[in-house]
Length: 486
Image (cartoon, rainbow, N blue to C red; front, top):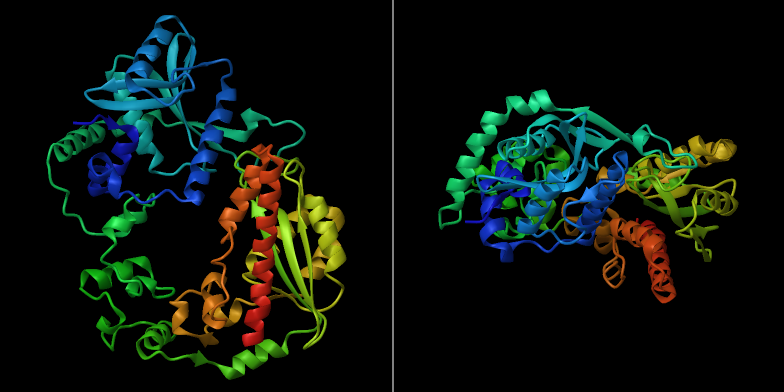
């Protein structure tokens, strides 16, 4: 039977089928997306940065892919030699394995630090720390304390990254000690599970994405059709699972007297009857409020876990790109302007100065999901107050093109309950989509730009810039096409 690692223990707490499949059927695992890989990479970066809280330690994994036996032996060796700071220290007890981010000896007493890339402590982190405490203490090293370290979202970087201000460190020893009997019981349960041959008969549930997205969604959810009760817009998750558990999966299974709201029934009936719904009065009012020239605007941002620039915080959205299509009058010639920053520099000043130059003084500024662009502009006004007055004038002109779709002034069955631009565009403008682009969503755009910080190949950088410009331009051109159809 395989060792029970810390990560597998946590998966077992979420769903025992998740644990079993990960150990015995890795071939059924979903492919890791670029977005997921970027999250993992950020977590590794946060972990390496946290090591600077206790500098000059020794890595028990030797910087190589972890080989369990060697890591266990090397950890013992380092402790025996009197090394006071050890990174990735490995411990095993009764077939349960854990690696500790940072192990520190202070005044003759050992303390363990588990590093998290979030900006706050979540309850399920305690399960992580409690297993570490259980394994390390039973393996023979008595911990005086155990801590969780996470990023401080109030930290603002200045000239130099101050690691001690970047992280908040909290002792969780008392909470972890109270969980030790539960850890022992869970280990017994999981070992018994892994000793059996058959996949556990566990149906899908809310735990499939809580606290983490399961790696086997594609396998466990393969019986769910493309359009099901899980696609009903703005229906609470617990209600969706309640319908599913009653055997109500397809739209035609939903009882006619089921208490969906009018918008949800519109979606269901549109799919069942292939109907297009249109509220002409509200659409006309939306169009009437638009003032030419029209500016179709879209931003792309990165969210570095470790602040890269002065006057920025962990995970702050840093705008690095915009696309702007301009239509001076109905039937006029469409103009296009764009900006893409340099990955080695803070792009925000050039971003806002060129945008303010191109955006004009009058006319409606159309965006898709205005809360995002408004947030970015407000943060620039906060961090660069010299632009505040001009930005406030811009904000008063912003119109949300998502509104007619969010509130179903118009709805087509092809939208499948979604009002994202990626769903609305092919429904409104058949044959016009993002499918032929190398970059097809904002997360990939963000990851692509951030990857350019570590890319020294000029050809690769030029290709990425080309792909980014094509993607962002598509976002604003899509808005132009959608408004034409409205």
